[in-house]
Image (cartoon, rainbow, N blue to C red; front, side):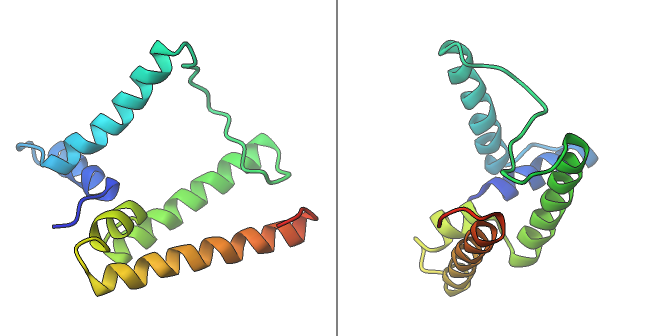
Length: 126
């Protein structure tokens, strides 16, 4: 079974709805989050905030709405694709899954196309 962040999130949600033993993916996801927070805290750079720079010229309320819609779209896309970018790109491709190769190629092509489109729309360089 492929390993990725989405699988950990699904394990945690399932554990919250039906208390059972969380799967390995849940512990991987918790380790990523807690490990990152621990490193930032030890380095003296831990500063939780609700601000996130999207690079788009949006006011904070619109920025929050844009991030909410983007997160929702990413969640639906990850569920529809059968996994997230890390699951398909790191695990699926390495085990030779044709579906993961197609998914990862699609993720990268979409990212490049959107980066080019935003650079063109916002007048930046690509």
